[in-house]
Length: 302
Image 1 (cartoon, one colour):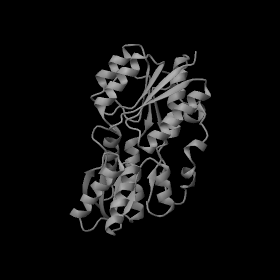
Image 2 (tube, helix red, strand yellow):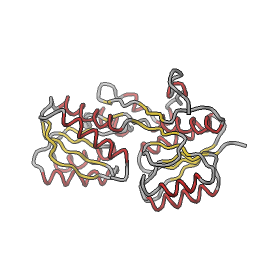
Image 3 (cartoon, helix red, strand yellow):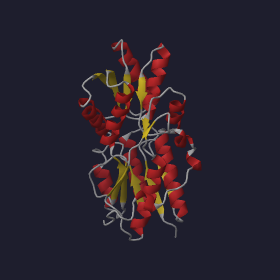
Image 4 (cartoon, rainbow, N blue to C red):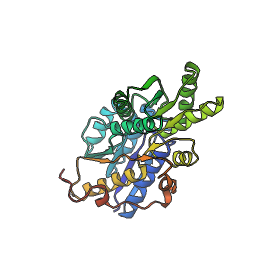
């Protein structure tokens, strides 16, 4: 009987989560397994995710691939699902609990890379603002920490202000509109994901102001904006590759094969000189090999 994987994302509107789910499905299908998608209809709603998790766990899938809507509130519900004997693969947002492995990226390094791209473009001088995701997301907390750490190394880059954009485009636009109302000059805007960066561009263009903007995730809309000269840069956070890695890891575990306790994909700055590969539709991208994700010379012991 085919193995069944259940993949949980925080929402279904973020393009990177959509790419992730496709990666899970394609990698599962390549190994004769199936995968189902689960996300709250209200983006990032922990209560709805808790109810979804309980319902899916009752169906006893072979493994659950999971990103919590709130890394604190989901600890108990995940433990209850684990008590059924279902192995969990964590991704994107770390949380406490008994997970086979965690697959993600070095979010602190991504925050630093975003500041590096901004500092280079501004020649180390300017007034910048930060638009962050929700405090419930460890990725946002870590990216913000990396941003602030890197900013300390650039004393002539002055942090004017920060605002929450909730990892979504419209809240990102609203956050940027508020920052523009408070500050007559903003040279750079660092956003901790691409949706908020695109929202920041919407707000800037609505009032005819200009500032350099960076995002994180490497989504196709961000790559298009980079190619058009609207967005300065993004940092690769390959949802498709990460989803494929999660499915492969889950199936390897179910076969009794070893996998690392942690798999971190490298960060890469996407700019106008190298953005073309990120324009390729997710459906047309090739599945990675496991050895590309976890080189054979790495310690693969559980």
